[in-house]
Image 1 (tube, rainbow, N blue to C red):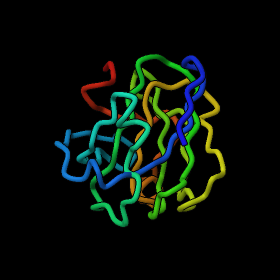
Image 2 (image 1 turned 120 degrees about the horizontal axis):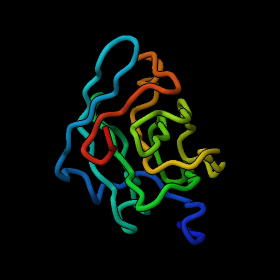
Image 3 (image 1 turned 60 degrees about the vertical axis):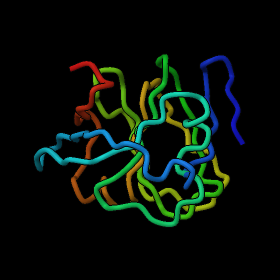
Length: 147
């Protein structure tokens, strides 16, 4: 299920094998423990954001998906048809981490809101945020974010 309300809130189905093997882009998350490199698929249009990583049963440890939005707004995700636990990192235009949801429950239809306006959401395997000691204010460095 996907709904958009005039750029104010988005509801997403997460994860799809349809995009498995899509080109990857490098991304770094800088925390107090250093820079942590990931290879991410980019979801930067409505069809890819809607479909996300739906139906995938695994994802490499250093991989993820970066959802890029055309304007800064609160966003809402859910885990319907998602089979692996995810950490969701909500990111502002300057790359600053504004909110983190750890280990979202697979296949749950509970809504997961950003609670703040963001331009990007990074999905990583559940446990990655804790493993790199991710905190609010840490920086995500990728081509999409201003530096």
